[in-house]
Length: 196
Image 1 (tube, rainbow, N blue to C red):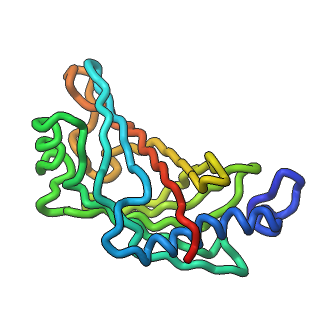
Image 2 (image 1 turned 180 degrees about the vertical axis):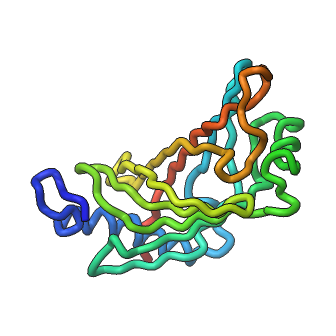
Image 3 (image 1 turned 30 degrees about the vertical axis):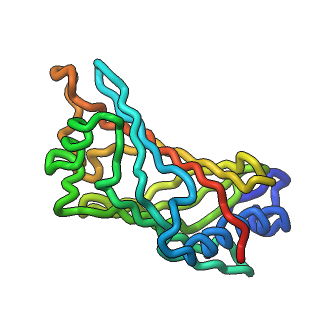
């Protein structure tokens, strides 16, 4: 169990429990909104020697959420992303990214992320263990989030992933100027609705 700033268990503080319940409870509220617009944005950045590409997945939703009031660290959230919804504002690049060279959306139309093991990190941050099932490969990694605006219930998180760990595209080589670097930054921003 992680420790808080004053040395006690982070999840044992009332503030810590409230912060984590805010996130997990709001995720449960979002999960009940069938057909609703995504409650935020999932964006990514990839680079090569020539350019930087910014992209976003426009179609994603929270499909399941479990809230453990007694121990928020045991709560969990499952997110589903429609990979064909990726958009880098360049039609030919988007079609290439959807092809078998990268995401292969014909074979792997969705990605699933399960967030669990929530734990506090400082006064306005938390970490979750994310298991990402993408392109037929499942891997787990920690992802850091921060509370951007408590009153507006806005949170954001980011992580840098090695796309080749999921078999996305060929590995980077410096001998090919257009070769995409293995590291891709993933950013999540969301406004958490109040529980209903």
